[in-house]
Length: 158
Image (cartoon, rainbow, N blue to C red; front, side):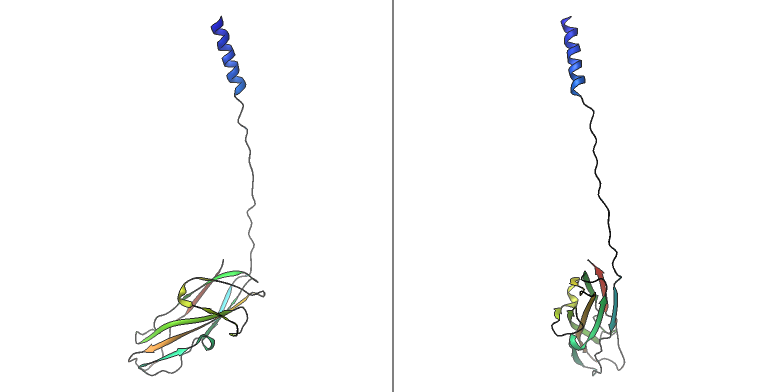
């Protein structure tokens, strides 16, 4: 009898000690803010006339320009795809230089290294960013003609 009573007490204790697992949950919101699309416009970097064996440097302030527009005060990542020649090995492009500003003026602009890869900049309070690029072109026995290659700016919101 003692043995069966201990078994009953043991089973009762197991039943009393086991509680059903309590479930709980939580939630979060998934949100997004849609901002103005980025646009990029530009004017060419023009080296002008150069002799068949020579070099010429165009400073950023008088070089090619890019105007970026988008959402006010937003950070953006800018990167350039830069040619190393103007379509002919005898017309090589050397060092690239640049400037950036949130106003359309090279006065007070910050130095920018176009060849440095992705860089973070910010659009102005009105959603504008201005970039100027310059470079050095070197000709080595280049044939007479007109040479060109694209300089591409890619801009994405951070």
